[in-house]
Image 1 (tube, rainbow, N blue to C red):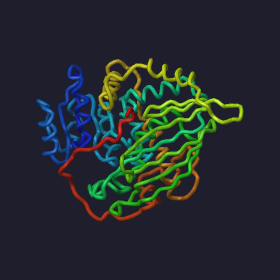
Image 2: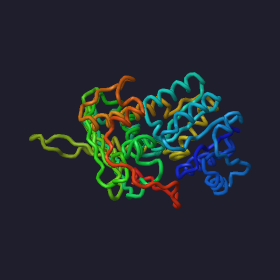
Image 3: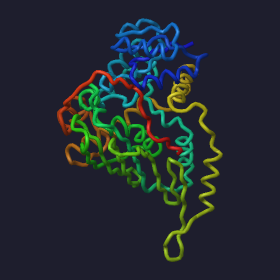
Image 4: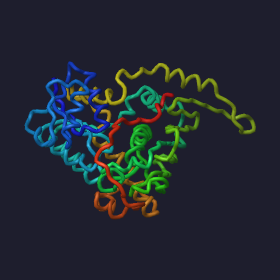
Length: 385
């Protein structure tokens, strides 16, 4: 029975707690940590975590033989907490984004390598049937070479969303919607496409004058094999529609699921290729459904890796790759320059201090609240709908 601790009792911690509770024979939550002890106690009571202790300082757990922790704290704390636990012999599942800088991400990777402990970065969208099937279809190459990928990470957040004390600052949140909302869709795109070689980006703050960071960004990408891509990240889109679209030479597939294939008439104009559409649809239908969805699926993957040595689907390097692309967007949007990957340690945007110094500050944070009374959150549109 693996002993688990939840570090941070904010809104996202509920998803982690529910995920662990899906495997009662394999793990037990023994502690919930939060700087506000009443928040930790509320989570323990809310989920009936019998015997779990409420702790205000995570360092109290470093010598308590914990097996696995979920880090659910603000991004600027991820590296220090994760490294402390891995160095103490504890496996780590850390919420997105992995860290607030590439320097911190590299510290986490080094701690994982030196300690021999697992480091997984939350990317729960991978653990859904639509995403798994989309990945399987793309891997089949039935669509031909990919020509274009489109990522629409459309969310909406009210002005007061950025009143929370750590949000809306380069220092503590590490960025805006590109880092903290589009991160899941960017992760999925990289999982399916591999990394781009260069990008050009723009960003703005159009509706949140209580935040330093962007509330919308757009990036144009070029991939090694010649494909182009577009990523739009936003918290100003009403309706919160999100989608990933992959245009291949022979067909197009997407999440939410849609398959379209075309062939040319004598004059070059398109007509439907029903045979290929049916082949791709049949392939998708034959791929298995996911048993445990979202955070529960990722927790199962981490538990399997601890117990059997099976591979992590989302390891620390995956998390760093996603962060590097996002940092590249911030660098290009702030300087107006094209970014070529990889970003080296000498880059001005490699450290959190460098980002704070060089990234565009749209506004200064005007109001700050310690907590919102309503801690419920929305997770966006399901990509199978």
